[in-house]
Image 1: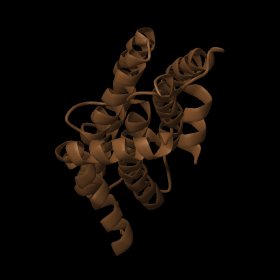
Image 2: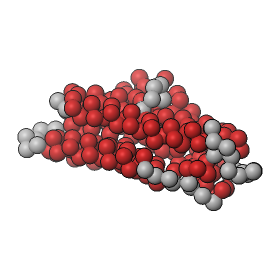
Image 3: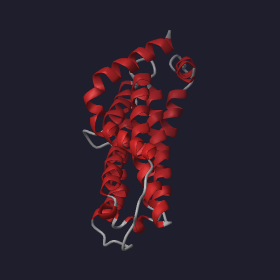
Image 4: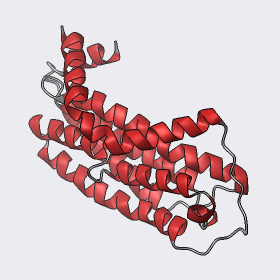
Length: 227
């Protein structure tokens, strides 16, 4: 319903809504990433990163007649996997150490190597690094912006992908290189949470192998929304 309404509203309009969406997308991406860089809490960093991801999602609305809706659907699938892969390990570890400060993630790779690996994969995917899930989602929304006549927005998007890397590398460095803050951190996960985090990590890594069928399904969904 939302996709149908958006397509009907923006695809045929001549009163500048795509341009307005493009400006909002650029502001959201840039503001979200800049604010994320200043955070000392990993949860707040991810929250502000979410604002930046919303900006990327908005890029799809600049070209709803062609690849925009398909790009949006693929982007949202990738974002769902990546968000689960980021927040799951962070929440689990934060509960064990009673802190969500970035500095307190030091030693996570020693006490919970599986969680640390999933978190790193998720952060790199959020940044849009290939060949992870986030790369394919961002590639498609960037293409939508270019096809919609907003190449300048795609350039801002690429710049924000580079900007995001700096914030995420700070977390990754702490997880793997900094000296542990705590002597022992027993992290206990129930079966459901463990399975969800494992599914997210597998999806982040292997989504690229399923891009053909996934994009075909997204294109079918696009056709259903527009007709």
